Amino acid sequence: MPDPPTVTLAAGQLLVATAALVDPNFERSVVLLLDHDEDGSLGVLLNRPSPVPVRDILPDWHELADEPSVLFHGGPVATDSALAVAVMTTGEEDDEAPVGFRRLFGRTGIVDLDTPTELVVPVVSRLRIFAGYAGWGTGQLEAEVEEGSWYVVPSLPADAFAGDPHGLWARVLRRQPGELAWVSTRPVDPTLN
Image (cartoon, rainbow, N blue to C red; front, side, top):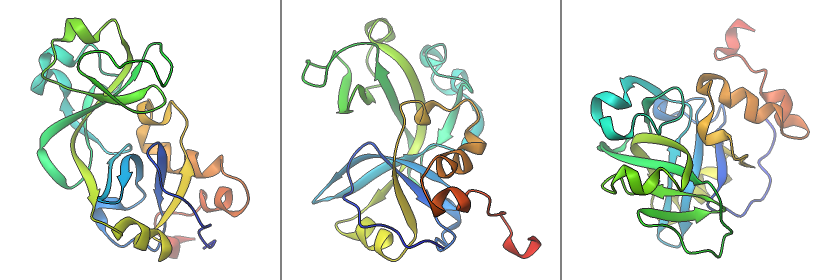
């Protein structure tokens, strides 16, 4: 397994699970880091779609949700709550965010699901809804990265809205330079290799 490079964690990066990560909640997961500061970190798993259609839980939002239009398991924390990650249609980073939208990085942010959808439709181009999230306390994520549990790589705007979320782990690694691209070919069960 390649040594993880020294990284500075920040919102907008991807955490890609390594073989060293033993928590089954995160096996072969890709996490979009939404927030990282001195108090801890928060992200959502991008490649864990549930079988539950958005229309069954949040009927007003199902037409805005990217395909597959299902709830995604965002992580093991607060699984009874929903979080919507979205991309604004236009705007620069220093523009004021529209009502119901909290910018996190670039044009990506979180939509308050209590906001009337008619206010969101004109300003959001992509949207995905997650049940729960992944969270780390102060220094916890840094320690996991240092021990080799996560590769930290740049995200692409489309990663959070992948039409084929199950193949995201391999696709993200395949586009990385050097040995990480090779890691993408690792079978789920290395004893079968």
